[in-house]
Length: 413
Image 1 (cartoon, helix red, strand yellow):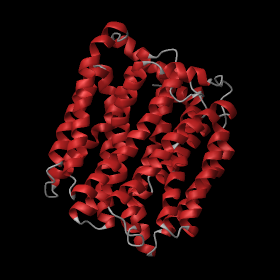
Image 2 (cartoon, rainbow, N blue to C red; image 1 turned 120 degrees about the vertical axis):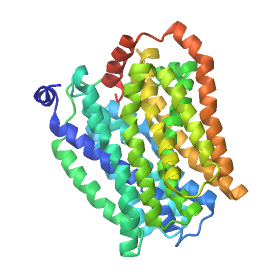
Image 3 (cartoon, rainbow, N blue to C red; image 1 turned 45 degrees about the vertical axis):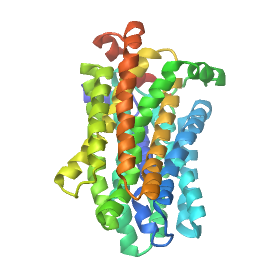
């Protein structure tokens, strides 16, 4: 690839602005994941309540992604991003100065979902500036903002320990959001070419189709599993192995970094061996990893490797979206928004399953066994449905690559 051609083909300041917006948004979105084990010293919580606290931002992000997606179509991604960052400051200020009960903290958690909805504005803002041959790279650069998760797990509990007050973390988070808001407002620009807004009837026609729900299920397990685990692992390491808040978050950081590294590999493998085969292998591996973790082995290098293997769920995101454009070529922008929202719902239910079963049984074993069963059920589901897929719309490897270019052109619109 010619780097100069890439830089000249789009708008680099907008691409950088999109990345920064996505990065700080992801950091804020998962802030409660590591912090909850510190917060519980002020607000004692049982396993179910802790799970609820880290699940609510994911639920909020899932629902609000559709709202911000609609605004992106109507008023443009730049204005939507500005509104998103301004509204993101509301739960940060609330958590910093005004929270005085667990119920209020639940409200803060829901509002943090505004940051999680940044997908809907950041990605189209960047991608619409670039021609099809460079949109994969542009989307990859903007989407690398999910690295904000690492900042949250690595620094949130350290800052809370240093100041002796977890509220300070919310206050300090306002600083990078404010800086990025200024940079974003100055340098980001909407592309001259903007697609026409989509109607509710268009969404309704897509939701009537069986394959829409199939992809929603698959993506809720891959993306939802990755995000849900990223939020919950600090609680697990702290509760199960007695690690300090900082050490528990450090172990989570290792798993998140590894899982993020797997994401582009998943898309690359799907292009070469096919999305269906890739997903069946992936779900099978994850089912084995989950079942192994359900025995709750002593904390060791092997245990950490099991969790890293489990976080390979992130590889499935690229695999799902290698298949989606082959099935929904005309409704691509609509289907990606629906499937993306379903991924967030999966991230909501995963902590709830682990936390509620821990509360009712006293052990994480049943929760991990159920999650293993869910992954195995996905293998069976794909095995049953792949025949009809291959007969009706699965194309050759060349067609898959063409479809990948298509989704890069419209995934975020």
